[in-house]
Length: 330
Image (cartoon, rainbow, N blue to C red; front, side, top):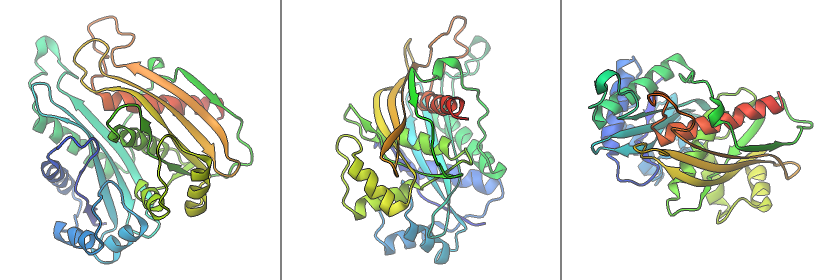
């Protein structure tokens, strides 16, 4: 199955070296035996359709990459964190999308590394640079794709469960619910944080066979086609529009209220957000939650369980929401 590797997208508009990151992913995939569609053929399809966004794929773009470029699937990668300074950080979230008009999500996973995450005895684990962390991240994603399922086996610790969660009993739900995750909003100036959080929900919801997650690029194209503008939260009229265009059962969105990615001092990193899911048929909120944690919450000895990456912390918090939902309505 040849893979069309899209250039990595810069979630936070931080000026990251996307070519270097894309090349590292390509090398890791080839080393694992994957065949890649030549980059020039991928770019030709994007140019012909004047498609500038590589943060997702619409149905027509997915189909064109399949029929014109010969791709069996498309790898979409978001750079959620990147820092090359004294304490480097790297975080990537990726998904494999079928090269068909339906653009189904076939696989999704993520990886995050921080220079301080595994100091080891006497600090011998320190000293990694951004390229070292990138190589580790690219290899982990390639292994996960080869395995065909997410590689994470981290247990959700109690400290990462939501501070509050309210859920109504589901009624007349289909065996497999079709879900659209809209960009989250943020109280700060960096709108990219909302995309970062939305991708974590896409990633972890797609692990559950009870959900069919609509590819974010398909959602984005639907919103653009109907000129739906999200200014301050999701309205019921927008839910109606998304349901009519994408035939979804549930719309998920929310707001990110706190985000600190540094992971260097006590109380850092930190992440906080509210989330809610709306039944697109009844227009009722079926669950809502609020989550907040710092990476060093509850630590007592030697800081060995300090979650240093803000992206990894956010991922754990999202998984905490979904774990609690499963407990509430198994």
